[in-house]
Amino acid sequence: MALLPPLALSLTTPWLAPATGLAVLAVGMFALWLHQKRTGNAAIVDAGWAAGLGVLAVGYAFTMDGLLLRRVLVGGMVGLWSLRLASLLYFGRIRGRPEEGRYVRLREIWGERQEVRLLQFFLGQALLAVLLSLAFLPAMLDTRALGLLDGAALLLFVLALGGESLADRQLDRFKADPANKGRVMDRGLWSWSRHPNYFFEWLLWIAFVLPGLTAPWGLLSLLAPAAMLFFVLKVTGIPPSEAQALRSRGDAYRDYQQRVSPFFPLPPRKELVS
Image (cartoon, rainbow, N blue to C red; front, side, top):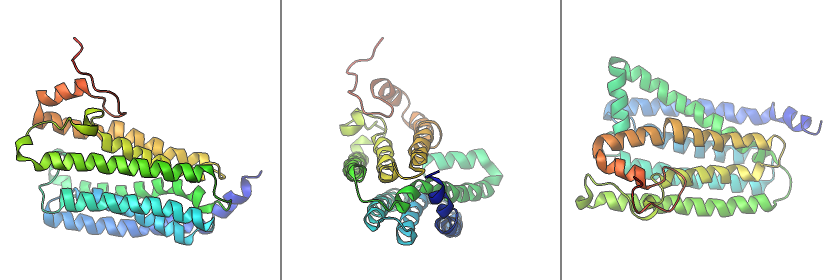
C-alpha cells in the first residue's frame, strides 16, 4: 500500500512533463527531418536524440517535486552526457561529412519511400527518448536525503563518461591519420572491446537510474539500461556498425572480430584459436 500515494501523484502533475517533452521533441525531430532533406545526411537524428534526452532530463529537474540536490544530480549528469555526445556527433561526425554508411544502406533498402520511412524513424526516436526518460522520474520524485546510491551514481558517471570520452578521442585520432585509411582501429580501449564507446554508454545509463533505484517504482527504471543493452547488442548499435565495417574492411575486420570482445572489455587474444 505504501506505493499507492506516489503512483497517484505520478499520474497527475509529473506526467505532464513527459507529455510536453514528447510534443517538443516531435517538433524538433520534424525540423531535423526537414534539415536532412536539404543536406542529404540523416545521421543528424543521432545528435537530435542525444540532445533531446538532455532537454527532457533538465526539464524534469526544473518541474518535479523531489529533493532538489537529487534533481540537480540526475539532471546534471544526463545534461552533461547529452551536451558532450550531441556536440561530438554533430561537429565531429555529421556537419560537413558524408552520410554514415548505415543510413546510406537504409536509403537503398527503402528506395522511393525513403523520406516517408525516415520521417517515421525520426519521430520514433522522439518517442523512444521520452520512454527512456521515464527512468529518471523515480529519482526526480524522491524526497529522501541523498544516500550511498547517489554517491555511487556520481562515481560511476565520472568513470563511464571518462571512458567514453577516451574511446572517442582514440578513434578520432586514428581516423585523422591518413596512414590508417582502410585499416581497423584495434588500439587502446579498442583492443579490449570492439565497441568501448557503447560499453561506457551503457554504464552511463546505469549511473542515471541509480539515484532513484530504491524510490517507489524505482526498480522499473532498470528497464532503461536493459533496453539500451538490447538495442546496442541486437538492433541499432553493434549489428549495423559491424555490417558496415565488414563491407568496408572485409577480412581485416573479420580477424579483429576473432581477436577482440564485441562489447564487454576483455583481454585481447594474442593468437587466433584454430
